[in-house]
Image (cartoon, rainbow, N blue to C red; front, side, top):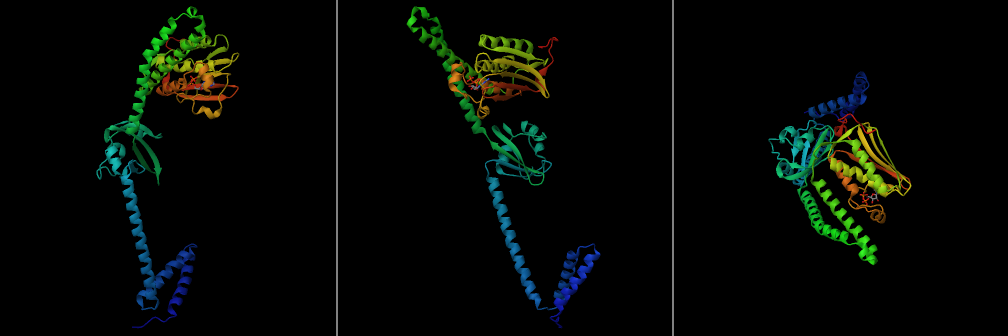
Length: 418
Ligand code: ADP
């Protein structure tokens, strides 16, 4: 059989280079592509036609490359299996969704918590595979915050928190975490606080009642002590009442909606401020919203008056307090501004926590329970409203409650509060 002369391979490569360059140039400048194509074609022809000495070298190179690729693909497959095994054992439910929220993959926990079944539910839109629920409504929203403590479709006695994270190209990962134990602990804490407060209420009422019965004139030497005991028992009573209010607000998911006429409420708030101030502050009301609120009259009164009493208690004599009720771009805002002590910025984020105080002595001295702003926050949450606080130490503070349009009503009898 004729063998290929040794000069033939380099010559073929050179010819391929030339032909490729020409082809590439003709094809619009892709010289490298042309060269590569022709060179490969030439070499393949040469090697398959002849027993060229380069053939075994080429063959072993190709075999080595093939082996390397096979090893790499085996390693990748094994890593992928490990990854899937790990993800399928995660305690949190994981569902991989495509751009149309169709289920691509899910783990055991997702089967358990969401009630998904494999392979039946693969490829189906997730929203259609779950029973109608808060979770399904949430999935259909365009923009969503994580959904907390909702009923798990696969285990109705459990609660889950769910979030959606962007993943890859327009895909998403849904994470579902069982929060039942946290909810149970929270419930135990709430029950404990409510029970203790309830148990303390009766003895405190009795003590307070007896203290009221004692006439200081019967024991003039004890008069200052008696005064202090009365003040402290009153404060303890107030703490108990505030704790009970908080327990109720925490367990409540919605309020009974009623019209809350703002004109008389603002007049009452002004009177309360003046009574508490006893002439030490200027109190003004600016109300041009011409709107009533929709919600719980008792709870709204309690929240709005808390802000007024704080303004009076944390503003030195001679300062001023302004209560405003105004329309805003997206609803209406009730605010209380004072020219009082103000609050350093580092405290603002924590003010609505229970018993959080900027200055304990000032709070206690002014008769505070440390629970007022916590109550305000809960009441506003129940009315889908939010609290904002602006303050400057030494200059004063503004506490504002922002109500959305769904909570606003035109006054029924035509009067407005301006
Ligand atoms: P408290 O019963 O102690 O007033 P709150 O929950 O009502 O409890 O308020 C928490 C803390 O926030 C207060 O202790 C006080 O330090 C601060 N605070 C609230 N309102 C004002 C205000 N208008 N000016 C300055 N500080 C305030």
